[in-house]
Image (cartoon, rainbow, N blue to C red; front, side, top):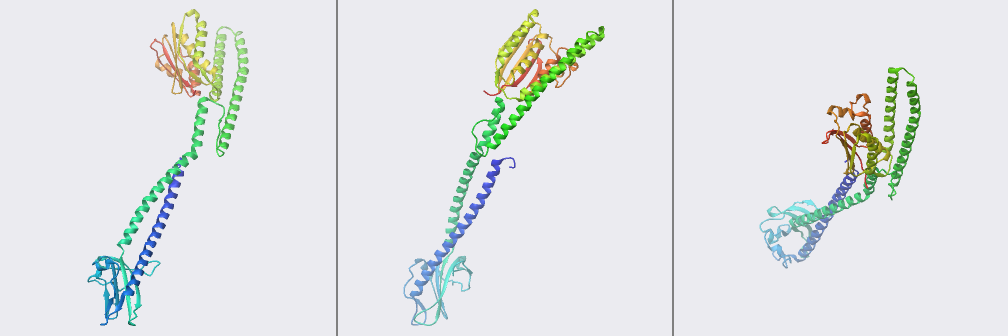
Length: 442
């Protein structure tokens, strides 16, 4: 959860909604219960008033009703509606009490009212309203009590709580979905920014464009500033690599000329060392230049024409050997054209040096990668030599015969473009070099 803004926002919203809706449910349930109690208490008050008006002393000194109560439940045994009138030496109760009596002890007081909760017949819990009255026919006080079984109250509260629970649950789910949609909509610019960065990398563009929300604009500006500074630094590095090439090659040329003045074997040994130094310098300068080109942004280029151009040039270069170079397929390369020429040139030159009569080049583009396969009908290369030939930073003297320095340069330059070079056996009989480079997006 710590690594996802959306989950964190949804979790906070869910906790807040649960607390808010839980508190709201408790408050509404409490208010409804109080309202139901007050309604039933008022009903019992009205019935008590009606019974008090119908209650009187009989000539023989007993309590009696002058008219029957309007509620028929008072006539049904244990119906849940009861009344009872008590005076000194006289008691009168509803038929619904049957042979039971309403408890005279004071029960639990109902909050906010003068009603009480007392035990009733058959284990019932009664809501009781009592009032002392004095009848007009005598001065003796009479305690009149009216009761109602609380089962109805509880059933009403339970029905309301069930409905309230389902309603609040549905409301909470709806609000959570609305929050999820809001989070998705609010974080959409970040997803679009990620896609824009991926597109920028794939197309090797120099800056982020488009219209962005006010809150995201500073981030986009900082990214564009960083890209610009990175491009400037890479350009300076490439210029420094070029300057270094000019500065080193001149002394090497002077050394090569001076070796001619040395006697026999010393001259050949010195010339070999100078040539090794020159090739190492060329190798590392090519890698430095490719590092800048691989990170710099540029357009996609057609790889087929570059391969055909190199094939024609190498065919003329090896015209005395009558080597046939076949180029099949096409694809795009997301990088510097000169780097592609150098990479393909090393591969094709290596193949032509060892081919007997035929070199085959196949190009294909799939899943955002350009695959170039170069095969020859030469003697091939032992498996143990293939690994050394493509080893990163491998030196020339660590490569077996036929690998040359070019394959190591190709492997390193391909790695700078987040690609790779693998060697294997060809069905033509010689070496198969499989090169993968980024193709970018159209």
